[in-house]
Image 1 (cartoon, rainbow over the protein chains, first blue to last red):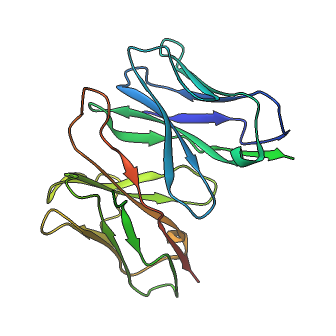
Image 2 (image 1 turned 180 degrees about the vertical axis):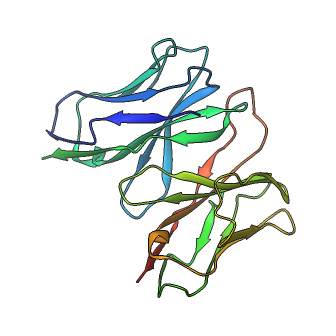
Length: 112
Length: 118
């Protein structure tokens, strides 16, 4: 059974810092891994999707990496802004890209 | 393109009462999911539909939870009777059910229904 953990549970940084969020999973037989953002009272917004054959994906100031052999993924946020404040969740998909198993999330606060 | 619609946004009920949530997925999305997200945790899949058939309901507490998607479009999730530990956000998501270009299922979440059981 897949289990996903995220470290740290919460993070507070000053504006402009580069930061790394970590995600670990127990079963390396994943189809893909996805990073989501969740704002308070809102649903989840997909940020980046990495297929199991890929090592990283980039979108703007976000870069996500995947190391299946070690069961780890990182989300790198460059030059953080107050608007980046949210909870970030990673999710591993089996079964041809569906049936996500989510981590508990990292709550990020970027202080102006 | 309209997103995944859910209602109500908030609901407060007493324990042992019943409650129902409604979800209208994105048009053309064959797969619909209900997730339960307890405060401080990631979403947990309760049930997955492919059109109007159930694909996975292994984590649905069937003694009190039920869900249906009769016409393969919108869906309802019901809790009867509710317990205090059912307090959570209930998220609905939908996807194409098949990959586009081997990559994107168009997986989209609704804003959720926040349930408080007192």
